[in-house]
Length: 187
Length: 265
Image (tube, rainbow over the protein chains, first blue to last red):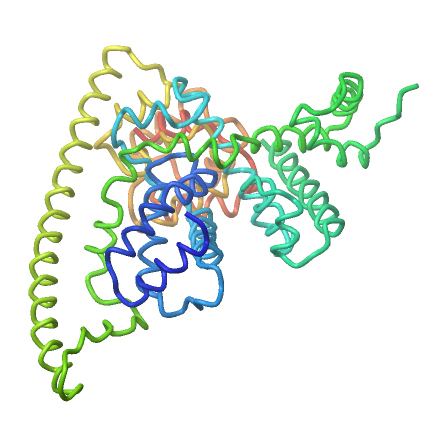
């Protein structure tokens, strides 16, 4: 769906049109799920985050400015929800037992629970280290390295030069690596 | 002539290295540098871990079951009209007085819409309740199957899935620990802080056994705890937290959860 069609649907949904809201959800949920999966590494949590995003959109539709692209507003809400997910203590991020078929789709090491667990723990250590970065370093690190964003596109979105983004990114990576090594040396 | 790789060059070229777009010799030089520089090696490890499929590739892998019914669930949860939602636009008007015409069409239209909304809301609420029941029953069935599989496979102490299944229904603290292979002292403290301070986490018998046998927890930690916690009593969450906090053990020290679970089970 192009942005024009999305904007029309969003404008109608903003008026309470449930059919338009449903069309938005059906058209964009796949992208939101994929974005959330980068944070959660499991599809069940990605689904929960996506549902929460749509719930927030539904409840606060009046805050969207129809003069601006709908997806920009939507992705900001979704990204904030995913960042909040990272801040939750790890033992509260329940891994739902759910459908066994989904477990096979968790990732390359889905058939090896031990490797899968190590991968997730390493990821949590990385994200814990990223939480200690400065706000600008954290934003760049998450958008480029975690979300796999294109550096030029991220620089444009953040309103900074590509060179500035590169310097910030290098500094963030260095700090994350130093924090990880410090933890590993203490172990 | 080869270019000497230093950390600045490595940082600049790491993306290309991980993407596989460097010439063979360039990639070799970078990996050689990483082999001798712990900082760059860790950066590379992190980056290789985070690099994954493109968003488009991930979108193609989304399980269809997750997409089904999402809008309906959200609408059922939302219930009330959204904040700032504008009113429905007025219905079509016929001839004559525009105001009367609008009223003649609008009132029945609103009544019909209200009836439809009530009916569909009632239907959706029932549907949500039915799906929740089915979900709970399914989760229970999967838990039973996993426990059965774990028992058949004779899951080892280090098989996390088998351990989780085997421990299903046991203490929440033990279940939480069983999901990890390692835990730092800082994380353990945060986990213990979730419990009431007087909650027994290690019984008197377990603590006595731990003090007698060679310690799986590691001598430094056990020495610290032994000097702060009396042998003849159960260990409660609050006392354990105080003992850990006043010990000389660093917050970043990593413990094996299998050893903690053995102590707590």
